[in-house]
Image (cartoon, rainbow, N blue to C red):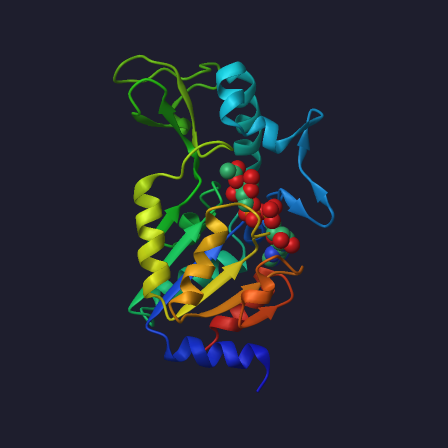
Length: 245
Ligand code: OAD
């Protein structure tokens, strides 16, 4: 039996599926990844870990907004690809009693493809959050000249509603991820370098709880050795194949 057939067989028998995604699933939509291919993202000479940091919000909020406005514009010009669509169709087909997508991506492409149960582990580039009271606001409704956007509830300054380096994952996302990891029969890990904690712990927790873990990535990652199967290749080609019944 080929590796992909082994995975299909497991998927056929699974009632609960967890799909953990990273930047690689959006690569073929045109959204740049952070790592991979031997490089790391840099903007205006600054590494992305410096721009996307809690410290930068304190030191230079306008620059943080510029960086996220730049990225949001790129994302808005992209469309979901065959990988996102295959995941959404698997959920909407009802073939799994439960299918949870946990994404490290902030681009909203899973939802645009039709996925309903999506945990945005690192937040969303499409919303702003008040620094004073935590209220959220849809960025599409804010004039781009209004930076930082003002909170509609308390008039406080707002920041991008994303998890930055040095910040905690929202507690509800952690709880949902824990439940999904401990309850799934198959855990599909797509397009992540698996170097960022705590997202990279999710497949390991799934494995400890008996799940069959499948990685989809053109490159080897630190997670590869802990996977039951590693499918080397691009998400937009492999995921439709994998979910073909
Ligand atoms: P990375 O950019 O670290 O890794 C992208 C992965 O996708 C690499 O392992 C690539 O080999 C793989 N890849 C590239 N093209 C692919 C394709 N077409 N199909 C499948 N895989 C492909 O992205 P993440 O692991 O998501 O966090 O990064 C994790 C976090 O680091 C991000 O959420 C972000 C970043 O800092 C924050 O900003 C908090």
